[in-house]
Image (tube, rainbow over all chains, first blue to last red; front, side, top):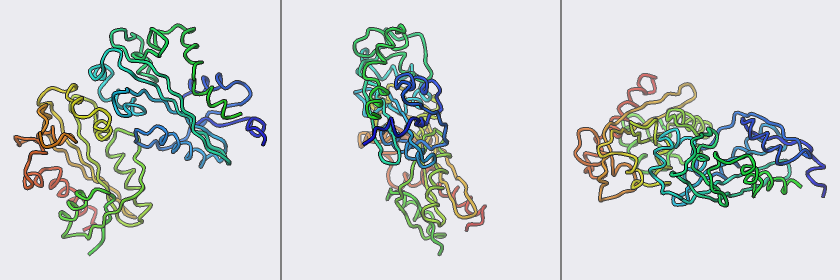
Length: 189
Length: 184
């Protein structure tokens, strides 16, 4: 069986986020070209990240009829049940990060779950990675990233600072460990 | 008598619809595989769902959406009410509010047939008490005290409950709108 690499040099990445595309291309490398596509796809309201990502990928494939993937990421507080996960944006919009702080303890266990669902004519697969760590209030960052609001509070395992306060070197080290696009790349071979 | 489909899997909701609309329609409830869109706008959710329902049943159909809104927060939890309960539960919600926190229930009915679609909406004001009802702590009803009442919705008797705006009043608004659009 020929590898996907030989069959298909280009795949679509259904995202409106240019930063995500650039990051993905960097991690996957030049052997495969990612093409950004912005589609008007309904996002289902659910706490099930795999379900949401699969739904969006299938809808994207229906439109494109070409190899495509979607990526979703969510921060999960371990003591809560699948929460806030992919609804983070809405929860933060609703009550603000300062009120979320009322719900957690110092060094609260949490993890980021990243999911990619890929689909082409012959196959569909799901890739997931988890990045464990904890949330800090005492040492929270003064910087704010609108695309990843919990990076203000989240300290990944093996580090002493929040994602927002990392040096470039620390950030690259974190990104290269168990990264979703590195994992995805393995499945594409 | 004309038939009107109600897209719900909730028996209590379908019983209430049958009771309130008995003079106008034969209500048939249908449980459909409908996607709920990711948005905080309850009207948008209800319309999206009723359009999907109409595509499936091809007959006059309505659906209903209910959410609890805490006034000091922005549209929260609203359409996310069920997820907030599932995720953090009422005891944690208490950390986000003070006693007698102003809040309201908003309920939307979305209707669609082959020529018309509309939404009917009602708001029930009140407050959240931190003294959660001892009967149940499963939903915001066990914290919510409607305006003019002295206890939570959970602690109301059956008659008082059926008279609440988001029960009786909702269907009064819906019937008025059905008349406005010449459906009855």
